[in-house]
Image (cartoon, rainbow, N blue to C red; front, side, top):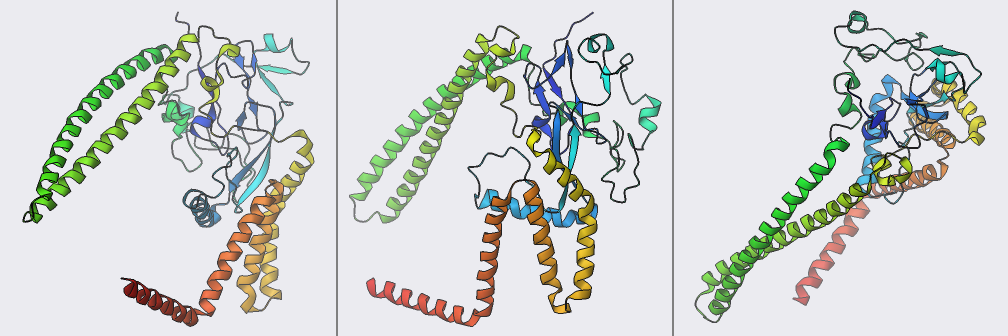
Length: 417
């Protein structure tokens, strides 16, 4: 019988994917009872968490998918292209006003399922012992043929309150990534097992050392060629009738200079990488224990981009309000649109729709404690909109002034030359 030592554990969760789903087995965030990890399951949602508590998550209404996509692209342009809030660490997924928030309760105070012999010693609550483990494969008839929900069907027209689908299929009938590619689903397809990591680091160090030697030799050879061609160019420049040949050599010198610069940049990059690998190898050599206290934090949590963080207990009242808003928001938005149709003139339909969307966004930002960012983004949007309105209103005046300025600049440049 082979004994295996676990290295990673991954829980399925809302709004998270890849590396953020998994934790190292020695991570203090992973609660254990003996050798069994503890999973805090969201009530009704079946999401799994490493810590007990309340989690604010979001779900998308299908018919709002185009609006969600447009706003996500605008936010991506705002953050990545314009570099806004680039210095702020992202601990949560960026919210969207068209996503409906709801509270996922994973407080660990419900039914307990697990090894009853161990759990009865640490809790007074009833424990439901689990059965013998069974390996699920596509040959399991009920698994491959069942396409329904894995829990309660609430007849929600938007499917937001319905239970998830089974372990093999999504709600739309497609096969789950976690089923056909569990390692890729948890971001483990790029991670080496600990037993192979040191050998892989040594092999990579050796390859980089050879590459640095080859790059150094290539730089020396290219520099010698560059100096010789530069010497020829200086000699040609002393001749008055060889302009064409001088131009050819200047182009050649410029090309060789760029090649040398690129080789030096490549060498600097690989030397930096080799230095980092040397440090990493030294850190690996110091790890001789399976105790989490002796493990450097980078080995346990460096892969995590956004950790699952429960809401503080002081915000449970806010979570209740968020749950009420989640249940009532769609109906209130529809009622507001109907009232705007009947009580506002037709010419103000767009204005009333924009106002409703803005009001909903403000309420959503308040529940997420992001009113500051919402106000900042609103100010920028209003400023851009005002600028566009001014350009549209004074288009001819803007064109005339622009043409005059361009003409004055051209006259100044010509006179200066």
